[in-house]
Image 1 (spheres, rainbow, N blue to C red):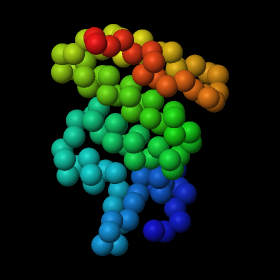
Image 2: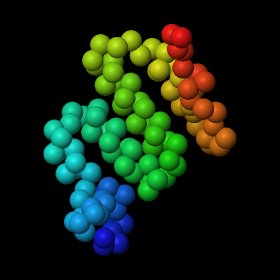
Image 3: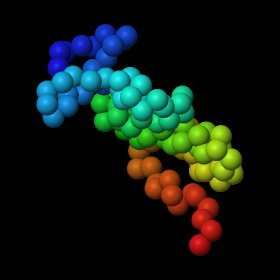
Length: 106
């Protein structure tokens, strides 16, 4: 993969397949015809370890998952509450497991 650090087409949205072909996140999104929320989930998962803090990228994915679940009719108020516990300007070091904040029906 070419070393590309441009703001328009950065490397953290690219990967090389097993057969050596370079692909971008957009190609995956288009191939599966994903809606906006699902596309954003894929984007944040695939770049999690390549851009910024992995926890922040995964929490952004979680935010879009909540929106997609809400769009599908699920009550996600308890999930939104859990996410808000981590939406802070403070650094996310030693962040507790987010599932501890999620209400379960067990």
